[in-house]
Length: 334
Image (tube, rainbow, N blue to C red; front, side, top):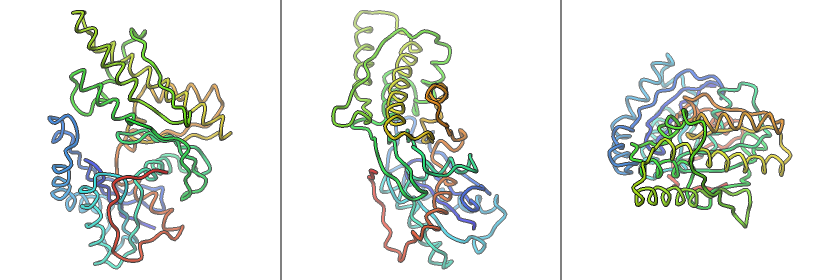
């Protein structure tokens, strides 16, 4: 079964054709990073306009790369939640038009679930049950995946997401957007971190994430060093901050593994591309003896291949749109 996936939840316009949920025939993504970098983050109105300008060409190129015509596509899949409403609507309405004109099934896909599905592309034999760690620009979750379409949230962030924390600290260090990869790169040559930052605890659910406190601690230390006229090396701040983030992630993962007695962990989302987080999770998997599944770097960030992958399992589960009332939903929690 060949599914055309469309992804426009934030600042990536992407289209892909995936066969049977695992085999990527094409994946084309138009990035808007240069367009938004001067603003230090994504501007929703600009992002929506860029999607409108690019979506037709992206879909066309994706079909050409897959050497298929629209008539040879079996279903149309599109992200409908969570995300920026204006951006989501561009993809949804484009997908509706294709579905209606071609008389092909329309499949709505949850963006977070599709991030998890990126690992089905990279690990052909992977199947539930497992735990999934979702770490991205807008989300920090640990989810119990019992079946391909059965998800139970066991952990979330109570304030900033992990990606937000990276970007806000990057802004304070005068790094351009997106700051995550730059902080990762600056940290690579620092063998011993200079600063120590607190790791916030969450009372109501110890598995929940909190990144606001560590972000504030870094900003306060940066301000203190400036007031003392001390020489500020952004590499030291970047490495110390990243080390603390890694420790928080590993502590939460350890607790979740022990709590659920599950020996498989799937990691996904844009921040899963961070080299230090990947390194520390690999060490942790050896210590706690669990299987670790990481996506290829090209499938960490938003892309339509993961949308089409999850859509295949939604189709098999009978989760199809019965009409064209599908709308965008900005927020979602497991």
